[in-house]
Image (cartoon, rainbow, N blue to C red; front, side):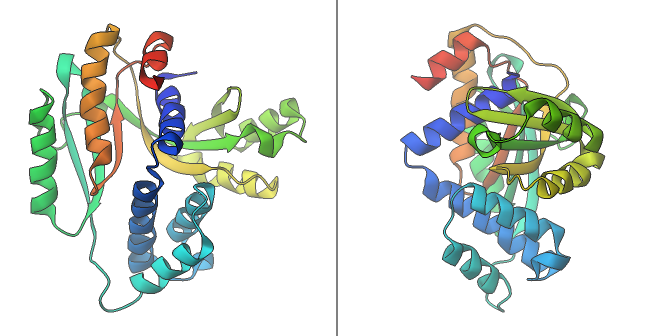
Amino acid sequence: MSGHNKWSTIKRKKGAADAKRGKIFTKIIKEIMISVREGGADPAGNARLRLAIQNAKGANMPKDNIERAIKKAGGSEAEAYHEITYEGYGPNGIAVFVEGLTDNTNRTLSSVRFIFGKYNGALGPNGSLTFLFDRKGVFTINSEDVSDKDMESLELELIDAGAEDIEIDEDVITVTCAKDDFGSVNRKLEELEIEPDEAMLKRVPKETKTLDVESARKAMRLIEALEDDDDVQAVYHNLEITDELAEALEE
């Protein structure tokens, strides 16, 4: 399994174990709200909202929470969230790209800068690291949800729809495609009545950097601290999650 997929799998396990579901819900609610503000409260005519709801269901968010977030976003007192990105380097030159949604950009910048400094990283100018990552569509599917399907036929159908890579782990299937093919792969999954646990556009590193476990742990402390910030939606990096590091992070 590739590095970014290994880390995603580890985060899902840690999220369940560490009772971080509340933070996950908060991030999804923010995405629902900004989706409504941008494109309206009708999922049928708002692709971003439709995707946010899909991810909310994948995270087992109660239906009432989803409906309240949509209703709140359409009200006059809804928070005005702004999309922000930050780029910088962690320990040993690991590239780190941060995406967030915030109602106070000064607060978020101050918080992100503090976290970089605390964990021996350095915040850089926007645009300085964009070239290190590709925007890819990434779909995470629970293997049990496709246990009744012929995997060879499924893979062929997804490849025809634009999938570039299909990785099968014990309990997770990860489908990756080009940004431009995200919609066609998502529609194919809908056609096949497969509901991903997560469907997102992510920043996938073009090349990864391997560190020894102790050095990698230092970089991961920065990454995890950023992920725990309430204004941060996603953190991407180019650290190679080796099997040895994956075992260490799961401890």
